Amino acid sequence: MEQKAKRVGKFNIIDIIAVVLILLAAVFVGWKLLGPGDTVSAPREMTKVTYVVKVEGVPAELYENCVNHLPSPLMASGALVGGEIVAVEQEPYYVLSANGEWILDESHTTLLFTAETETPTAAVMTTKVGDQEVRIGKTDYILKSEFIEFADGTIVDVRWGE
Image (cartoon, rainbow, N blue to C red; front, side, top):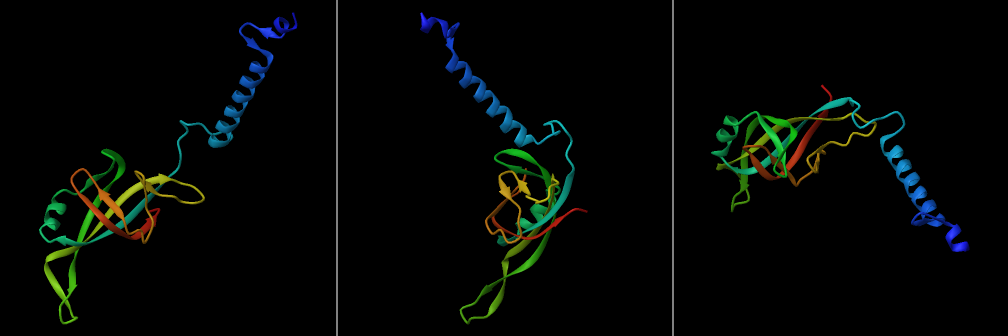
């Protein structure tokens, strides 16, 4: 008789308490992640980020091809991620000769790509393009757009704001 008294439908009291505690925990975690008074659809203040990626040892003929495809929207994992490559500059590329002297390699060049994107404004700025963080000195950056892709770029400059 006692067993039947503690059951409510197909649930017993312990099951109901467990479900209520799980729901309360989910609501608490959601509130902490979104913050008080914040909603998912609320507009967030954005900061413009301009960064420069240096790619060395590129075949020289690729410079003109890159210029012809600018501006070019940034991509990651096959999807557009917001932002674009807006400019490219060319610098000479030097190699070490057998004599130990630096000589100009005319068949290769160094390219400096300037890209712009926007990131949510926060007390600590973490800029990501796709899954990659944008930080000065990052040496394994993959610069990828609709028409351009270079691996092992180095981020040499980042400016937040106008």
